[in-house]
Image 1 (cartoon, rainbow, N blue to C red):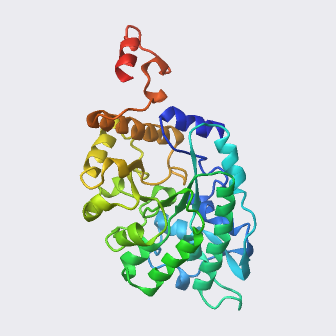
Image 2 (image 1 turned 135 degrees about the horizontal axis):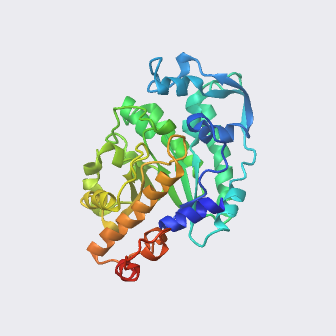
Image 3 (image 1 turned 120 degrees about the vertical axis):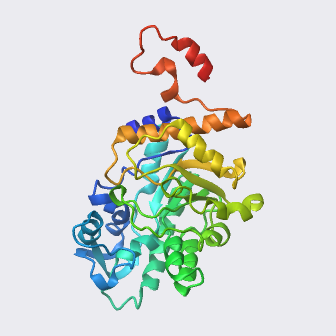
Amino acid sequence: MAVVIGDQERAGLDILTHGDLHVDEDMAGRAWHHYPLQRWAGFEGDHLQPEETTAPWLHYPPGTLLNEIYTGWRWPHVVDKIEHRPLDYAKVWRIAQGKTRKPVKFGTCCSQVMALFLDIHTPKYKDKREVIWDMAEAMNKELIALRDASCRCIQIEEPTFHFMANTYGKDHPEVKFMIDAFNREVQGLDDVELWIHTCWGNPNMQRVMEDTSYANSIEIYLERCRGDVWTLEMKDRQQKDLELLAPFKNDLKKKIAIGAVSHRSLQADRPEDVAGEIRKALKFIPPERLIVSSDCGFGRQGCNREIAFYKASAIAQGCNIVRRELGLATTYIPAADPMLQIDVVPGRDVKSAAQGAA
């Protein structure tokens, strides 16, 4: 944990994470979903999900990596009433926050995306809606405990509105129910900065689908969901749909966190690349409402830590480029300090370079 926190500070990030180190290193990131399911009451076993209950956008032909992932993941069955059991999120956050003076954001998988993979094997639930609601209430108890531990930046990851609205339409009854379930999940968190993370899938750095549009969900995320920050996958989608934010530009009720580096490419983005993404975003998002991040995380297999580090530092350095252009104060980035490079080329005037970078 100390190494993860130290790397993020060296990269120059303003808000840090604990790196999801509480979950197992599992096939293509399955443990991201699986951690709560292994601990709450009401679940049992380790089963392959049958074809008929698999989400419509998760079917792939044999011989493909995505088929291996989604047919290989195993899940517990719902066999009894779901009840909260401690997940120790508060303890994990304290371990991380105790290693830095910068704020540590704690993220967790949203209940409704976990429910995509669950099958009901008990008469105590008549449908998936009841399962999702009880899971939302269970997660809410954990989030309240996290807030009570003084965590002031909490991220709920991957509510399913953008997937479902893009498939069924924004007014579909299931979409409306998911909004209610999400708002129940985050109830009582008004005194924290609540982030809503969305992307379009990230198992082993893979693109899960080609039809990715926020058009039917933008109003849902901006107007109908509780929260303070909405994160969008943008870099890997060539900033598709960014223009849809234009009508909201002067009255954004949430901050917008754009992905300025891709979670699906092994190319370490350059600071000037990130700056270019920021300049495009500023056409539709005022600077005081813009946050710059990655499209998604780098920990679900496929990306090594060195590349992830330089992608993270490119975010910080790219922000400084645009801050200078806007006449704003820059932040110090240890990774970009000429005096702190691992090796210094003989004859290079690092002191002058350091003064110019300050």
